[in-house]
Length: 309
Ligand SMILES: C[S@@+](CC[C@H](N)C(=O)[O-])C[C@H]1O[C@@H](n2cnc3c(N)ncnc32)[C@H](O)[C@@H]1O
Image: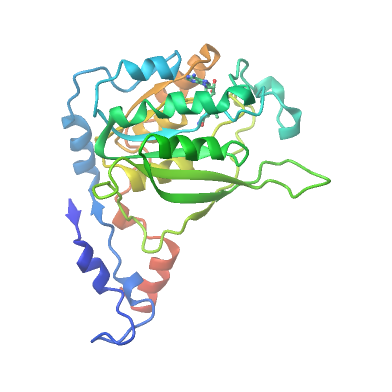
């Protein structure tokens, strides 16, 4: 495992007035991820991790009661994409989907109960998180305030408020078209949280396109796999345990298994059982894992070309 001390990282970004002159793109050319593991190291970390409870499992029940049964300080990372609170039935033609391929039984929360529901599930998190763990929560803008308030009330510190530019495929006549999501990265201990800087200049505005899997049956709110993989890459290590309280189609389970991470999840809609099972089973362990140093982002690639590295 490669670890670069933070002062080492800072050295690469010399500015005016410091001893060595600033050379444009040099820091990018020299960039190394904070932590990195070969595929064999990642597999070993996955296999060596021992648990006193069952993992790599999705439970089909309410996450609030389900989380109460998990041991304290047992979770390395949480990815949560809660129901929107828009009385969304999951079958809306508005979203341009063929409802024959949309699984029934999407469970939304009535808007008047959203604040209470949000506080209930978020208040379960601090007990479950390890000291260096982080929470990544997806939210639209309409109920964002409830999530932000619940994070604050439960002593979780917001580290990043990411805007994910996302085309919902809606059309509006008397207002701007909503084309973004919020991804909130919050931690239990702001002095000791895990963050693997796997890119030289990771910005807090992300662009991911909608995934079209024509002819595949799913719940209508599936996150693109890439966006969940990105959270996992920055927020966890191989062998870690990732919890998703709102598993939906099982995107987090697939992303975790494909990245040599363990997972645990809850989903209240039993209609999604076969969809999750199928997605998990068709994903080989470590399928998406590439050591971070071997997949430099565009900025680093261009800079390395410039410096012939
Ligand atoms: C926005 S979707 C999650 C989609 C998921 N991220 C994916 O990529 O497929 C929210 C999910 O939470 C589930 N849900 C709602 N209330 C729940 C609860 N109390 N416990 C567990 N799951 C719940 C819904 O049935 C729905 O599948």
